[in-house]
Image (cartoon, rainbow, N blue to C red):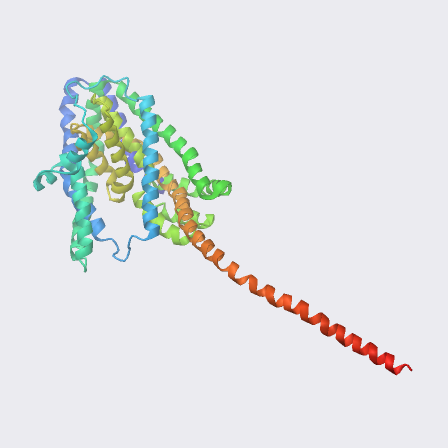
Length: 447
């Protein structure tokens, strides 16, 4: 029953997609156009919430961080490992999408062609705005995220009693509750929207979604078997690989059952203890990983972006591809640490590339489809990353100990040899003189 409860929303969404598909295939154009506003209501509500949701959740999350939690060496190494692994998973997904092209069978939407832009030009427009009030628009999501992060850091430094941070957290929780209420309406909105989508693109859109799911499963399997194995090998050699596969099954099952990285954290902590990972490392990296290390989400972000590239006939310029990888890393490292981070990432994709609002539901559907395997990848990937962090941290300690050990022995070894030589030269004469004296006394007594 608990498993069914965890999957209830996904099952309702799947049912909504099936009903929407049937309506789109068999209902008349008039009926589909009549129910289309039901889908618009859902999309409009989500976009209305996105700006305050992003601002309050990100700012509150950073402002309320433990002020004693300085960026120690372990924390710094943890962040570096998380970014590198998320980048590798994004590049692997990019390689898979460029080869398979899941939407190649769909005729692109006319009139949506956009001019390719350079990377620096796209980056400057994405992270900055000319006016503060432009931050309040969903078209400048990345700039709003950066502003919120910096503001949260500043509040963390100046708000000693954390009054403002706690107030922002209350508003953040209210916004998340608002999103939860809207999501109760999601199956109806998605059903109506998907009916319009199938009516516009035909049954080929279903094939594209199935191809996207297949690509995700294949890429995830390759990343799990090849790169997780590689990380474990780098961290501990052959024994590290054996240790990883001997204990990871608990995290694998728990993540699929709960569909939550946070809910899987206790299992991951047990796995790390069973594997013998240094607790001073695992107690820092694993809780952090459960919120800001999502390789499965990075893979999904690449699939979502290129799905929309094909649907809306957007040229795949070098700059656009680099921005896509940047968004994927942000989705896996930065926004995953924020409640509703997947939702924020999808809205960021839509706003950053200038896609129409209808594109949000398209890629949100991909998110719902790959949710279970993505959670599994996110959770299981935390263990080999922690193994790498432990290797990095302990190697520094061992090098310091080795250096200190090499300096002292040469100074201590020579002294013991000196007294040994003195004993060898002095003792024999004493013994010989004693014996000769005894022999002389015996000779004198015989006559």
